[in-house]
Length: 449
Image (cartoon, rainbow, N blue to C red):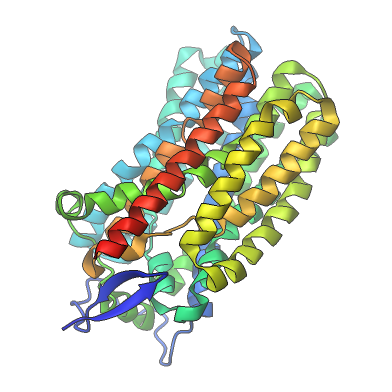
């Protein structure tokens, strides 16, 4: 009979019998107990490199790509086209997850991770060297879209199972704390990306920045991917880590079987964090595009305020771990979704109140983002039966990003310019309402079970 672990009242079976290992087990082997802190290091390394790639492309979509790849359109239309291509990675991500799960099933965990990060590196480097529209015409746009899809496929394929392993091995009264550790990769990745762009924009002329300066962060992203590849391989391919992953039954399962048996948990898990994911792009990417189009202030100034916001976000993520362990992750997410709903009402007033109002929007938004995002990852993945958790957690994350974040910059910028800023607030409000509904449904299902 299976033992059970409980995460805020949500039970998940933990089977005692390990599955057969499917990967190489002899690289950097060592004996001894693996602490949750050690697992957390691997999670932070992986997430930080992914978020850096993510934000480099996101910032470039708002500040660079409209001029470089869509010069024949207005700044607004060019930005909307750039954001449409930006969303392709989120559409491709679940495809990458399913495809690379098959790779792991037939080969090894390290083979899957190496191949995924190689695809990420090639795609990122391809963007860095991609000629502009003036040099290559429409082909440049097509290649940009293909490279962006490659990034999404690779990101889906780079799922290493460490977040799920961390959740299963964290002390029961410290799961909120350990859950937030991996989320620290987001502010770290944004800080490095925003800092690089701010420095380059301040140090170079506008012509030089648009000619070659914007490419430098993509070169850095490629280098970070290489370092992250070896760091993560060193962790997940040790005998100790591999055996622990297998003992916890963190191996891929068929996506068809997962959806047929655990589809409800995937949907609830994705929607539970929707408020946080919608806010994610509204305070990072959207303000940059809004200011760039309206030319109302210095873009380096906006990046500077966002870097201050990152500090608040980091503090918020840390606080979320303490709060979640005391009051429960589900209650924490529900409370933050309510606060985000209240914040959504103020969005149009703040963004339309000049530089001071925009600064308040960014700083308050980053603070709320940290508190909510700190517990957003895998908030209800304990619902999954043990053998479905590895693939289920990956696809739940993919769906959350797709529904909550993929089209946020595109929708927010489009509706704000054509209908008014109030509609951007309404978009954020819809995400908060969806989160509250999903958390309520999850609670009722938990009570019944």
